[in-house]
Amino acid sequence: MSAHPSFNHWFAQGQQATYVRTHKSPGGILQLLEMERPGGDMSRPALPELVLSQDLLGGSRVHGDSGGGRFDVVSEKGAFYLSAPDVVNTITIDVRHRTRALAFPAAQWQGVLDEAVDGRFSMECLRLYRGMFHSPAMRSALRSLWILCEEEGAPSRLLVRAAGCEILAEICRLGGTPFTPAKGGLATGAQRRCVDLMHARLSEDISLDELAAEAQLSPFHFARMFKQSVGVPPRAYLTRLRMERACELLEGTELSVTEIALEVGYSSNQVLARIFRKHQQMSPSDYRRIVRDPESSGASDWA
Image (cartoon, rainbow, N blue to C red):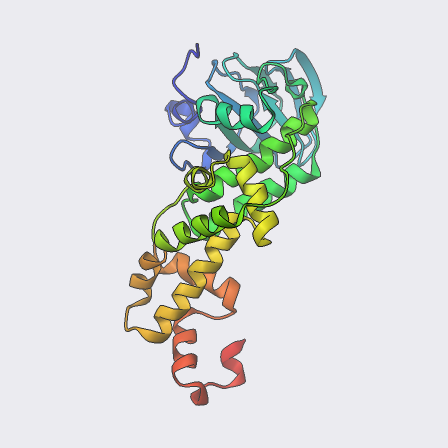
């Protein structure tokens, strides 16, 4: 039993809260923090999450125990550390440092992991708790997750669950328990039902779990099989549908950009504008003007 309610609670209290620079917490599925702290004792109580931390600066001496035995290393920029759930962490870092942390609540993820590795996964047995390690795949996945969070504001449940599955797959691989590979793509009927569900709930924060349930698969296997069938991950496909619908509404209605943003599942016109510009290379307002009066637009409008 953990001595503290949660990772989120620990870092929202007292002195810990003053170190947090960024905090994104979508529905308790995955806690995302970026922290900058002075050197010293970084020990914390037992928490009910598997915590992955990345050193953003490097050059500090890190020593202690995060659940797998004592270690003493000079940290490197981009290096990762893993802390076991329900275990007291006794960590000291000698200089000021900046880290990103992803906390996986065990209660939210254990079932997904059990299905993905046929029950062979144990959070207590990972050998990665023993200090610093590197993973280019994990670094890329975490960087992409952070960029998408900046674009979308509060990240969607679909985005966070999919990103969590990808990162946990790499943790399992490095820890010696690779995820069971998905076999083939989705059945035609399952694919159609999932796409129909996306269309029907375009304005909602639909979750990967709901889509996976529609296909009667675990979230991890569903994400892999959907990509095999459709060519892109579920999150990217949902973004495509939202952009197509936004274009239709800009062309054929007088709805404001804010109203269209809400209609296609984004929290504000600013979020829609960022994502729309990324995919269409122009703002929603410019798109509306150009498609309605193409003769009035010049080459500079497309820049």
